[in-house]
Image (cartoon, rainbow, N blue to C red):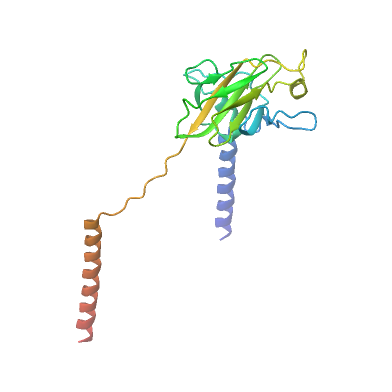
Length: 208
């Protein structure tokens, strides 16, 4: 029994070790969008959550490399897919940059999109800021989240947004449970009845 407990402890430690290794490299590389000195959590209407990356200032979408947002692990997810850029790609309507504007993805959003995120990029001295949208929200307004109090950069108090990228996660399909066809159910029922009759017949023969 002691050996079993030791083996169990070693197994649990190994599993936990692998869990740490397999977690996103920057899963903890974020800071709050709201503190005592700044609050940019509500700079995008229709957003339910906000993340400021501590590590990434670019949102690369190179076809042969992992998406930057997946390397960062925005909102604990590493399966984001790139949709397009606001004001640049067809259907991704709104203001592409500056201090404030609007966004509208109502023409491109799909029923299979489970989560949607807007990622804001600026210039030197800032990192990526992501806003996770509420379910059913497909348009709204935005103000630049790149405030001096939040990033401690030099120069003016608010930096312009360079561009806004839209990312989404596909809805996971629920595996369908197979339902036996009527003929199969009748066959199973027949086997069960046959087995019961056979058992009773043997019992009667033994008693006789």
